[in-house]
Image (cartoon, rainbow, N blue to C red; front, side, top):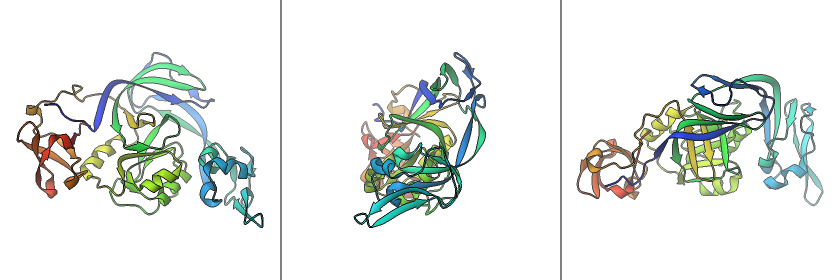
Length: 336
């Protein structure tokens, strides 16, 4: 009897590319073996002081945002200057977005609906938090690396590009739903702020500069209408997220990850690969296995297989939720 599926798949040699914008100082070369903590490159970057989402503020579509911009990319603006404006009510009224802080205008995210005001430039040193081998370094383009990795299947994504790269940040490691986020710079991060996210909170995360947001579940209407890079692990609505699952997921905090929109997967670059690679798990190896249920009566709950009943059914101990006899076809196996 074979296991139906595993939540995390593991690869000993996953190839990924770290994008380079140009102007980076590189510390690695082709064919070099790297380990966790080694310098990859350094670059000068500006943090985000304030961000404005034109879709909400001007009530327009993302594709239309650029035509309402009245500022110049890279220019310095003072507090109170007009950044964007739109005629409404048949031209009788002008709706404006006004800078609430002084800084440098950045229109690099206007295709996603944002105008950013940047702070002063700072030097940022990027280090590896994984091990691997450098395949190719192309200045101004990318760094290609082979590394051990784990992959998590996602229910759905709204990824515009095929892949989004960056370090993942688990800001909220509780299952409690947050109503607000602190004033922190999330530029370049792929962010988890909780197992369930509202539209209001997602917009605030992107206004802090996040590249993408990962969540366990959210409302389908929000997912369909957001027009921003989102990865949903389980599905739509408010779905139970077992604390055992989230505690396993939090182990990848600050890891370098790839959100693959074409494959609907999250790839995590790792320091080493210790997990068993063989996918042929037989009956005698099922006892004690950690599983997540896809059965409607305990969907999303995580438990331990405590008994093998026959070739199709096992008894699963769900802890406080009790024990239940479950069809093995409705279980996914968790190997982190």
